[in-house]
Length: 93
Ligand code: FES
Image (cartoon, rainbow, N blue to C red; front, top):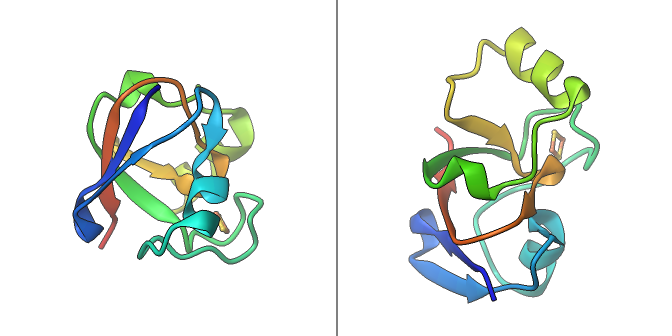
């Protein structure tokens, strides 16, 4: 099973393949915050520290929002990401 590591919380969580990060966070106490849950508020911004290729592909909706926010290349919206393999993320500052 893939492992989602949340560096900010020093947490390593085994998840089902294709698990939505938002669902994982609902069952674990993490510091990733969620607002709209729909890729429209930016509350859940994370930085992907290792293996960005192990997150689900970015949809146009997320890409447009990140562009508007002038986000860094390694930033994603956690509410839009599914875990496909081992990945390390941290809360974006
Ligand atoms: S919770 Fe609003 S963008 Fe993810």
